[in-house]
Image (cartoon, rainbow, N blue to C red):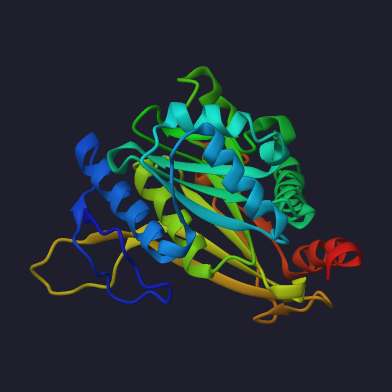
Length: 307
């Protein structure tokens, strides 16, 4: 069985060079690096900085901040994780609103600067809605899972990433401190959907499937609508009878919500399988469902301040 690092969001045939879906650190690392490289290429040279010292780096970020309205992603080349963290600690203005994605094999990082309150508000509102639905399951409360916010996950000093909001089964808390979240949310405001989709693919591939689901929320310009995409690992369409299955990151659900709270397709719902949030079965287990009514209320909650 193999996994491809590239998939069609509409569920078409996987493309790209597959790697083995296994516990091999080399195989997982190769796939994660391919996705990181694609993310860098997508941003292009106009969004790329060469790290040339802490002071110079801080000055460049300050120049960017002058014209920063919504958010921006920047590729930083020729920098180690330790040096980048040291430099970012000096940029106090960005401390509460930055996300870091690092790949040591490329000696590069991608920094997302999101100063707008919309970014934080959407991710928190979505996680709270999921926690409410979890607490409705008999034998469960909001304390059955652990929120991990923008924690950095991955392999320290190798590759790692900070998401927007995550959920981890409390049973994982006794393991290694950097154990992966079960579910991760990534929010994009004035970012392209292809960028967000690479975020989703990285979590699913780099975690070797320990992260079971990624929810993407893309806020359009002027926040006139939200697009929500649900990403999971799954088999690609069969290519030929004699070929082994290819396991790829797949978009399994897409829905849109406008400023009036109308969900498209009509009646669409977000279903999170119980096994995506919890590692062990429970006598009362059931899937977590956000109905179209729940999603409408979520949009209308956000709309007074943002739409």
